[in-house]
Length: 87
Image 1 (cartoon, rainbow, N blue to C red):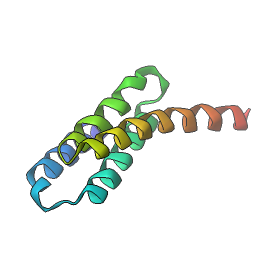
Image 2 (cartoon, rainbow, N blue to C red):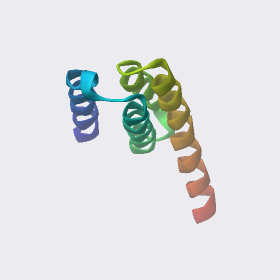
Image 3 (tube, rainbow, N blue to C red):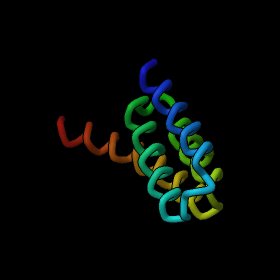
Image 4 (cartoon, rainbow, N blue to C red):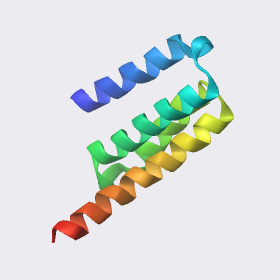
């Protein structure tokens, strides 16, 4: 629950300050939130990380939204491969 609240708070903070963010700043924020959301919620809800990355990036620019979606996918694969390596 704490992860969800922190994610929503970060999205709202990005929305509030979107006029001050450059495209690269938005891409970094979308990447971080998308990957962290995918990793924190695990493989059960894979689409969640991609959606978080898209929504956060879309607030800034289209390029940032694409980067957010890709980071959501990356977070899922990092989680999968880390489980395989530990076995």
